[in-house]
Amino acid sequence: MSRHTDAAGDVLLEKKGCAGVITLNRPKFLNAVTFNMIRQIYPQLKKWEQDPETFLIIIKGAGEKAFCAGGDIREVSEAGKTNQKTSQDFFREEYTLNNAIDSCKKPYIALIHGITMGGGVGLSVHGQFRVATEKSVFAMPETAIGLFPDVGGGYFLPRLQGKLGYFLALTGFRLKGRDVYRTGIATHFVDSEKLSMLEEDLLALKSPSKENIAALLETYHTESKIDQDKPFVLEDHMDKINSCFSANTVEQIIENLRQDGSSFALEQLKVIFGSFLP
Image 1 (cartoon, rainbow, N blue to C red):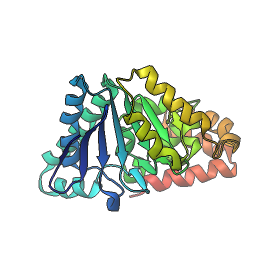
Image 2: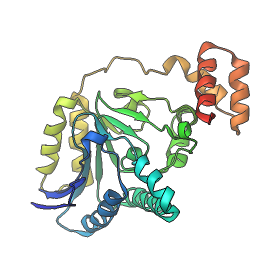
Image 3: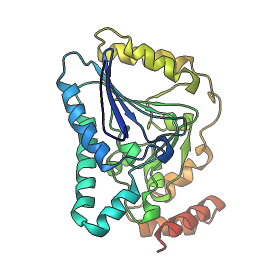
């Protein structure tokens, strides 16, 4: 096993068995990703992609609370006050890493256990496999800080069922547990107590193909029973979401919500207007 870390150990890059393993290692900060972490992950990802002895790549978060709560906004904000170029470079290199994950030639498996928001979504959703647990919490909350849903949000959100992605983008609504799978954001759902066992089984695979990996993930997914019969949290509201969020402009979506007038629609108006307040 080889291992590479920076001085602070904010990200661990390890070769284990047949896999390259990325561990976001800032549990006290919900594994928020820093510029330095991005600059370490990208070149290692490209090396593993070309390494004939690396058959898959796993990314996970340290601790039990979060996979990755997003980019380290404080770091970006402080850098922007002194050097605008630094904050621009952060986003450029973050998006370059997101693209590298999307185009990675090796199976890329994100274990999105715990909070997965913003930049954490960018590190996971573009990969081939995304494994949620009952403790997963997904959101794209960027509009609340006056930003758009970035890290590829403009690509993957509109491709969710109906107008769900537009709803998630504008409201920052949080999906939890099995609902992260039901929307297609996760490709598999595994009970959290089985997650470490799944990782061990992935690492123990011998020269696995994409199909071998998919079969193992499917086995764990099929055996997971938590919240199996619980209805989708937005099931009763999907008709309204599809109707109100079907407009081509935010202004028309707001008008649609006003005209609808239901308690659900009015609640979304409060959320959206709150997001745009200074």
